[in-house]
Every structure is written in structure tokens, then in C-alpha cells.
Figure: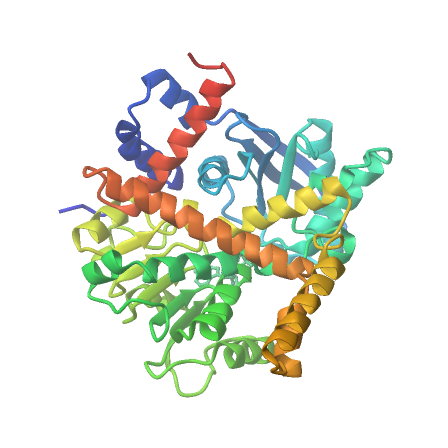
Length: 475
Ligand code: NAD
């Protein structure tokens, strides 16, 4: 029996590491080097808000410099603290390793509630934070490349890019100092949806795995499965809409800060998002069972096949893990299940698809954006028209040989050359499928590894260790 107690996010991450480390057969010293955080920069800076000076606390942690640059989002939240930033930076190192993105892990945090500040004040805070990062060499296309996370988005990334560019007007690669920028500011198409789309591909891959589905007593395939989502922000809303539209999933429950709703017959996610944008709340959505703000955590216990926590860490712990009714927990957020919660879920046979694999779609497409910035060219620009001409010749030949006419609609589908968005989605899909297969192979090849998270950590540690060894840093 596991007793409920409060463990920090970082404790959980370290416990996951410790559980996986023995399966790698690596030297203790090398394991220690992979586990520890290489550097944390804590800052306090003043900002004038409504005629008064506020002192803002902020961080940037670089967990591992085995690859350059380091990479990870920037979070704006009241709960930001050093342990949280280090835990998130740590997860970034393992995430990049699993999906073969050649970066070390980093993360930034600014301790503010962004919804309490005006846009002008947020711009001031973001630009000042960026200046501090520049002054201490914690940002740069070859050094450390931030991206959006909880409470930030493309708007903040554009401010960061503009501030960096002002300091380094002669750096031709300046756009690569940050990813998640708006498309017209050197961003890449498909970055905004990337994490949620990657979560969808990851869940789909797990549902296509016969062995896993048999173990859970579920039919193979994502179609028709029921899903519950916590948090309708960037990651949650894209996971939900893509799962409904492309996976034919039925969304039966949703929670946001104001509370939760449930309807076993299904909730149309597009209608719900429109409703919230218009009324400011999900609670007045028609025909749903309503849970107020103080009961919003009930979402974790809703009946469903797949539960997707997509808000914050420590949402399933020793207090509520025994009541989870989902068969699959898809960790779209970072660290939503504590180590104690995970142990209870494992005992109960619930499959957890771990964050360090499942939400890696964001950093994968950030990597594509960084490559685009360094190459100074949109993906698909060189080959699109050439491919179209070649496909048209093939279709013409087929028509001439068979004597049959291909319909205009089919011809259009066949001859279309890939645009940037097609290539980005294709690269993301390939990455998520390969990532799942590698994690699953680690899981099935090692009889002592009992869950996908331990397998994912063992895979990440092994990949990072081979970098250290190849670099000659370790014998
Ligand atoms: P976001 O700020 O866009 O959205 C978070 C949403 O969660 C908001 O709508 C907020 O109102 C809601 N929320 C907050 N507390 C809640 C609660 N107690 N119950 C229900 N809803 C609540 O943030 P995001 O970028 O979608 O990030 C969400 C999670 O995904 C975080 O853990 C983040 O680290 C992780 N993540 C994000 C990305 C990315 O590309 N944005 C990439 C990888 C992982």
C-alpha cells in the first residue's frame, strides 16, 4: 500500500531515472553525470507595472550540454520555482534523446500569472527576461533556444526574437535563437499544433499495438475510443480536435480552471471551444454533467478509455490514482503523474504513455523550425513544382497505357507536390511512430522493465551515454 505524501516534481523525475538506470548497465559515474542538472541561472529584475516597481523572479536551467544548443520552453506561471524548472529541463534532455533531436535539455520559467498582466506589461517582462538571458549567454541559436510552454505562445516568442535581433543585428542566424515564432516571423507551419498532433500520433500508435490492447482488453485502433481531456490550452485543444477529427475518438469529458463537464454520449470539441471562447466557461455547455471549480479534479476519475492530462504536473498522485477509471493515461502535460501515483497505476494495470515520449512533438517541430532558420528557406520550396511535373507525367502515362481517364479530383490528389505543412506533419508522424517503436522494443526486450516509462527513461539514458562515450568525455 502506497501512502499519500507530497513529493516534488523533481523527486518524481529522479525516481523515474533511478528506476531505469540499473537496466542500462552503465557506469555509476556516467549515470550521475547524465542525471544532474549542468547549470541553473536564477534572476530577479525590476519591471514598472501600473506606476509601481515589481521585482520578478525568473529562471533558465540547462540540464545537459552533451549536445548544443540546449532547448526547452519558457513557462509563465505563479508556481514556477527552481525545482520545477530543473525537473522540466531534465525531461527535455530525455525527450530530445528519445526522438533523436540533437539538443541538450533546458527550460525557463518566469514566476508570474500571465493572465493578470496587460499585453504591454507582458511584453516588457518578456523583453527584460530575454535581455538577462542574453547578458549571461543563456540564449542564442548555437547556445540555448527557448520555445513556448505553459502560459506563453508565439506572441512571446516574437518578442524574444526581436529583442535578440536588436542585440545582434549582424547575426545572420538570429531567427534560430527561439522557436515557436509566428509563421510570418520566421516560424514554421505546423508548430502551434505540433505537441497536440504528436500526442495524437503517439496515442494512435499505442492503440495500434495488438499486445498492449489485448492486455487492456481493448479493441485495436484509436477509432471509437472514449477520451477525457484536462486543460484546453495549446496542447489539450489540439490533442482533442485532432483526435476527434482524424482519429474518430469520442470526447466524453473535459476540465478547465473553472470546472469540469462529462457527457457519455460525446462532446463536440469544436462546439465546446467556440462556446468557451464566447461565454468564457465550459460549465454552461448544454447537456453535460457539471462539476464546479472545487470539484474539477474529478476529471481524473471520469469513465473513459484514454485520459489525457494536458495542463500541469502532479495531477495524479497517491491520493487519486486508485480511483482512475481510464485504461490508458496519455501524458500530454509534463509530469502529470507522480512517482507514487505511477506505482499505484502500474499495480492496477493502467498503461501510462510517458511524457518524455508522448509530448515530444513540440520539440521535434521546433527542431524543424530551427533547421529552417539556419537554412533560410521554406521546406518544399525546391522540390514542390518539380515533383508535381513528375507526378503529372506518371498520371498521363497511366491514362495512355490503360486507356482510362483518371477523375479530376483523383488527378489533383495524386499530382500535388508537398507544401511545408505536409512535410512538417510527415516528419512529425515518422518521428512519433519511430519513437514509440523504440520505446516499445526496450520494454519487450527487457523482461525486468515493467512499464513504458521505465523503458523510455532507459532508452534516453542509453542514447545520451553513447554521446558522452563518442565525444571521448567518458572512457
Ligand atoms: P497553455 O497555457 O496553452 O494551456 C494550459 C491550459 O490548462 C490552460 O487553458 C489553463 O487554463 C488550463 N489549466 C490550468 N490549470 C488547470 C487545472 N487545474 N485544471 C484544468 N485546466 C487547467 O499550456 P500548454 O502549452 O498547452 O502546456 C500544457 C502542458 O503541456 C504543460 O505541462 C507543458 O509543460 C506541456 N507541454 C507543452 C508544450 C508546448 O509546445 N506548448 C510542449 C510539451 C509539453
